[in-house]
Every structure is written in structure tokens, then in C-alpha cells.
Amino acid sequence: MPRIVSLVSRKASAASRIVSLVTEAAFILLFTLMTCSAWGDEIAPSVLSGNHAMLRLNTAHKYLLLPVEERTDNDRLTVIVGGRAEQTLNVRLATTKADYYVPLELSAWQGKDALLDLHISGSGRDVKALSDIALWKLLKYSDTFDTSNRERLRPLYHHTPLYGWMNDPNGMFYAGGKWHLYYQYNPYGSLWENMSWGHAVSSDLVHWKEEPIALRPDALGTVFSGSCVVDSANVSGYGAGAVLAFYTAAGESQTQCVAVSRDGGMTFTRYPGNPVITGDVPDFRDPKVFRDEERGRWGLVLAAGQEVRFYASEDLLHWRETGRFGKGYGSHGGVWECPDMVRMKVRGTGESKWLLIVNIGDGGPNGGSATQYFIGDFDGSRFVPEGRPEDVHWMDYGKDHYATVTFSGAPDGRHVALAWMSNWQYANAVPTRQYRSANSIARDLSLVKRDGSTALCVEPAPEMLRARKPATKQLTTACEITAALRGSGTITFSNAGGENLRLIVDSKAGTITLDRTRSAIPAINDRYASRITAPLSGGRYNLRLFLDRTSLEVFDADGTMAMTNIIFPTAPYTDLSVTGSVKTRIYPID
Ligand code: FRU
Image 1 (cartoon, rainbow, N blue to C red):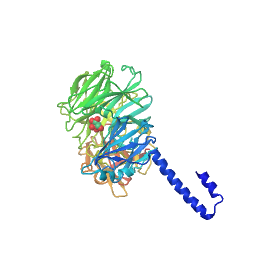
Image 2 (image 1 turned 90 degrees about the horizontal axis):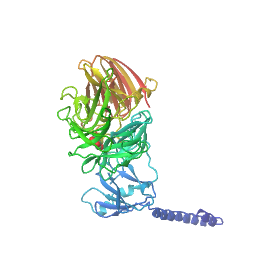
Image 3 (image 1 turned 60 degrees about the vertical axis):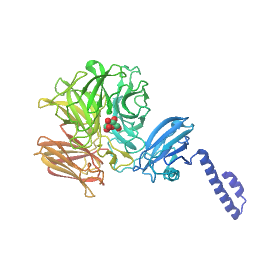
Image 4 (image 1 turned 120 degrees about the horizontal axis):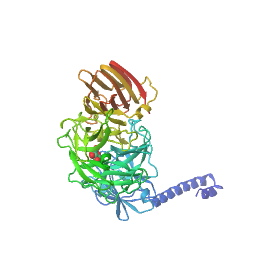
């Protein structure tokens, strides 16, 4: 086309040049319109009622970018190919404006006729009103999706998803020098929905690389929490080294299912015999598979209402129930979720014990969700905890430490745990948009004898020491601060906006308190702003504080107390001040 124009214009007068330029512009416009409609880039929905529309998809593109408006209700989208429902998802599609976009991947249907069926929520609307919503102008095709960070509040050395909602860490395992972390993930919005397993990999537990989504919902349900093990002995018949994922399919009922990976955990195929475990209670979920070496078999623990149930298997595929635990033990302030069973040596003794982790949806030491644990003996069926039934042990006293479980197959006899750093009291309301929620730093768990009974030590993973940069005088937004205190003292972080975050050690009361009431972008909700207290014994304390823009994790260096909280200052803290006998050092981390 430009060649024709140039031939015509060579001998033309000034007037005819203008004419030819206009002709060229008209030609380009016509060409663009023709190619656009030939490619189907135009979004032309067929609106069939006040709630229902259909859209023929142009699968030549990689993505259809869906505009999300968080204050709207979920709409139900179904991709139909050849008359079959290939994918269904719930999205809060924009009706007035887009808060952000999420990508619907079209690559799987490239070259096929695909239809998007949209059930748009809302009442009292007619065809005309649905045709007029902003959605149709905002939807767009694209071959790229920009995941570069747009969040000022995104932490630097904690794992976060590139975009979308995240809750529990799932399926964590270590193999071949890599730590695999899957997580409860909504790829279609930054609020809880469409549970899938996101995936990230790290070689140092500090820097994470995001990988493609590992598990998406199927006809049995969305993919709730669970675990992975490496089947080195090939008991499942899927080949030595196959990675088996155990998760809850959340459909009409919650059932336990298996998916198998033969490429080291990158891609999974469903086991055709799913579900492998069914139950008789509505809250029946979060299978954690563990090696039961004493009996030469595999064990599985899951949460059922307010107790846990144990199962056993020789081949990882066929499971039988062996026992239950929980009635009358520990805290019952909420539903029991995400259990873990870990066989651990007791340091300095020849003894081994079982650590049973039970996350609990409500009733934590400072309100809302939290992680309790029991230490005891297990004979494959019966778990018998030490101490009195009414004793309650918290792994972390903060408000933002939940769904904690350990990596399977950690090297050197280590037991490494990660927690989701949020609380169901306000997780959906925290002030980020591109993504929601981060995971905690990795913690090493161990058992020691203290005052005649067995106690749990929670310490930052040794990788965190290696992540330290040389000490600086100036507080940075992402750092570790060590604080040595003699007796009572306070440590205050403040920013240019006059906000502060105070950590108060009261050696008389034997407590440590984090006051985050003046440290929040307002209006998360009334259960967010709070003074959070944990017991702290002794008169001299060595604390390790991990600050990373939106979280502060506090550890007593001897492993007796951990307290994890998220914080949302409107500007970064630039000043650190203390009262009392407190010596601090600041180590940046990035
Ligand atoms: C815990 C939990 C799990 C469940 C998952 C769903 O936070 O409620 O019990 O599997 O989240 O996302």
C-alpha cells in the first residue's frame, strides 16, 4: 500500500499531495477496521438477558484481559469449546471502572472456536442496561501481561505472588537443591476465589521464582490446601522420583485427591482414581502426607471439623483411617485446619517425639487465626500428647501467622516451616491490589527439653543469616535488626508521617507487646489495629526483628517466642529509637 501511494504522489502538485495524504489516511483506517474485525479484536458480546451474555473468543491472542472491580459481586465465566465447558471461573468483572486487570489465558484453545459464557451478577437490569456496562469497553485482547510490580507496599525478601490473591502455603517439598512452594491462589483477582495451586521455587528460601500455576480446579472442585511428597521408592508405580500432590477438592463435598508430577513438580496430572479419601463432615480437608518410618509406611493427617484424622498407606494411593485426635485437647476456638505431623529428634537426648501442628481458624492468642501444636507419641493410630488435655501451645503469638506447615524432605534432618502472613479477620481487606498477602520467612523447628518437658523452638532459618548485608546505621525498609535488652525497654520505628510502631518489653510482667495501632493505613477493619502481646521470660533478651515494608517478625533468639504481624505504614519507617538498655544493629536484606 505505501508503494502505490508513493508512485501516485511522485508527480503530484501540492494540492494533489494533500488529496493523496487524505486518501492514504482513509485507506489505513479502512485497512485497520477490516483487519481488526477479521481478527475479531472487537469485543462484540451478544447480550441475551439482564444477566447473561456470550462472547466469541479470538484465540489467536494469548490473553483476554479481564477488568476487575473489587466492590462488585462475582460473575461466573465459562469457556466453552466444541460444546464442552473447558474452564469456569468467578471474576468480579468491572461494571463502572477497572481496579486492575487479570489475564484469562487463551493459548490452550488456539485455533479453535471458543465461546465465553458470562453470567453477570446483579438484579433488576435489562438487556439494554447490561449492554451499557463499562465491561465491554474495558475488556481487551493482548499477547502480553505485565507483571512488573506496581505495589509500593510489596515486601522485598518475603514471598508474594506476582499478582492475585494468596493464602496458605501448600505442597512444600525439597528436592535436588530446590525448595518448592505451592500456595492457595486466585489468578483472577486479589480476593479469595477460584482456589488453585500457584507455584514458586527457591534455592535459598529468600529469593523465589514464580512458575506456572500447578493445579487448577476440575470437576471435583477447586483445589484447597494439601501437601507433596517425592516417591523415591516408586511405591505408587508412577516411577522413582515422581512427586505426588495430595489436596482437597472443594466441590459439593470436600474430598481428598491426588495429582502426579513426573517433571519434578512443574506440571501435574490427576490420578484417575480420585477421590482417594472421602468423609462424613463438611469441613474435611488439608491432607498432609508424612513418612511413618517406624511402621515402614506413609501416614496422612487431615482436619475434620475440630479434630484430626490419621490414615495409613503402603502405596500412597490407597488409604485407610487409623485413628482420630482432638476432642477435649487444646484450643477449639475455631475450625481446625492445615495439620502437619513431624517426627523430630529431641536435641541433646536420644529421644524422638511427634510434633502435631494444628492451625485453627479463630480463637488465636491475640484473636483470629493462629497455629497451635501438640508434642507427643504416636503409634500409627493413637496420638498421645504430653501435658494436660487443656494445655494450649502457640507456635507464634502474632496475629498474622497461619496455615503453617513444614517442607517434606528438607535436608540435614531439618524441619522448615512457612506461614501465611495474614489473618482471616481481615485478609481480604489489606491495602494492596496487585496481589494480596505474603508468606513468612522460613523458620527452623526443633525440640528441646525444658523444665522436664519437651518444648518447641522456633528460629529463623539459617538462610536468613546468609541474607544479611553488612550492618548499617540507617534503618532500611527491608532489614533484620538485632536487639539486646537488659530488662524492660521499648523499640520504636517511626516515619516522616508521624506514625510509629512500638515494641514494648515488660520484664516485670514477662511480656512483649507490639503496638500497631498507630501504624496503619486507616480502615482495614476494627480487628486489625491492635496491641499484640506474647509471653517473654527472663531478664535479658536477644531479639531478632525482621522488618520488610509490611511485616515485622519478632523472635527471641533462644527460640521460645515468635510473633509475626503485618503492618501498613503510609510511608516507610526511617527512624529507630529505643528507651531502656537496648543495643541494636541493623542488617539490610534484599
Ligand atoms: C486455611 C484454609 C484451608 C483451606 C484453604 C482454602 O486458611 O481455610 O483449610 O484448604 O484455606 O483456601
